[in-house]
Image (tube, rainbow, N blue to C red; front, side, top):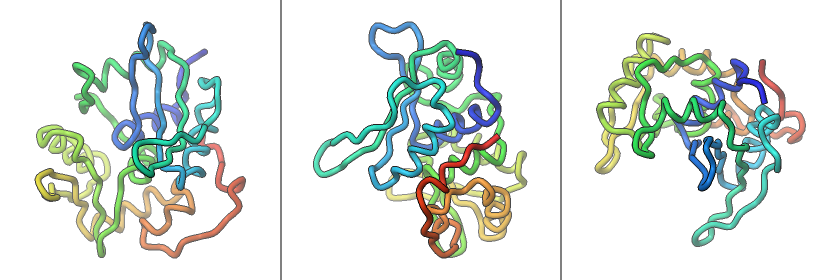
Length: 204
């Protein structure tokens, strides 16, 4: 099946920092990548599918979850190309932050679309799934890569990343070219209504 392009790697990394998961399917030697969002984010799931469809047999489908939640999801095939990433991002089936992790603007944009939220003039990245030690690694990575000023913010009993007001301005400029119009509100922009086909554009 070949290897991941740079754009596909970035989308995978951004997703793993957010809501995406790699897992070893039962009875399979290799890992698969799962994209699972609310059905309200159909356009976003379809966009990820278009980027990765060469690794997918069956397109996205609606799936009812617990309670009233309705998900829209797809999984890739179980392939060595995903196993190598799984070995970097997981220990004992728990997601970690690899020591050699690198971020580019596309990975940052996907991470933001997955798990970013706006509060007044700052941005939060909902990193509660990671330990405080791993979140400190992410803070250093954001500083070293993009010169962002960020801190940990306590949300109830867990911590998440808060990007300062000044650095939020830089964040917007860096990720804006990759943000789907449906997420403009997270940048503090007015929502944009477009035809779904116009939003499913490939990145290179």
